[in-house]
Image 1 (tube, helix red, strand yellow):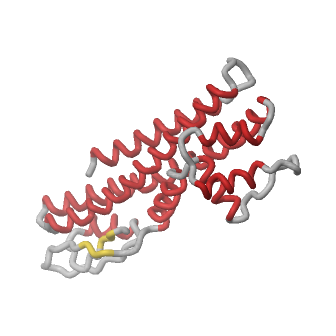
Image 2 (spheres, helix red, strand yellow):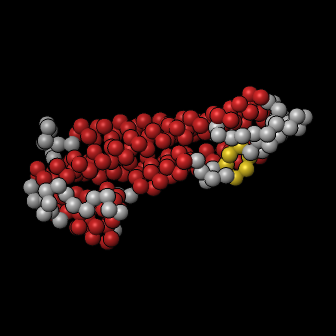
Image 3 (spheres, one colour):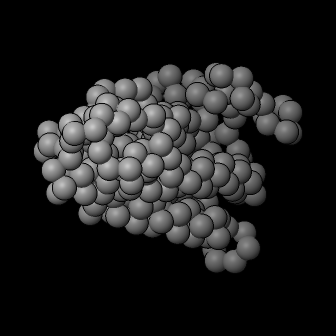
Length: 233
């Protein structure tokens, strides 16, 4: 997915140094002030961002079913519950709006058990979102640094506008993955909010308000990272 600097012809030692920090090994050809950009493979962080974005765009039920199908979790700690089996069946049929609440109510007869599962699910989502946020920050910092470096090279006559445009297209692709992750996290937050309204209407310790607040805070941080990248490309 990513373009990387293929700096076969550079003059600026400063640009060479910064590219080396980006895991590039430029070759300097004195007197030929050109910086080129070639198609390369995605960095590990870019690949992880794309994977996490795709995962977050699944509904809570689809995500749980995918994990169970992969062998991550096929049963609950209390043994005899068939929740994940039903979740897998529901995911095959296809997750629809409200299906998460319906699954909780179908598979757990009492409010306490429903809340216990909802709290477990939202904590898992919070963990996924936190990890995605960290990757987003890593990608955003590198994107901005490399684009600014190319802009400086263009201003100094050491590259051309096509090279800068090619690099910006990579940043835009990564930004699209960030926005997908944000959309997915917001959709999950909406599902948890529906669950909160349906099974935990009373205020106090017997609800998931704290976890929901944590999720919303992380989504706001994700949005800030994406907005900063958008401003700089």
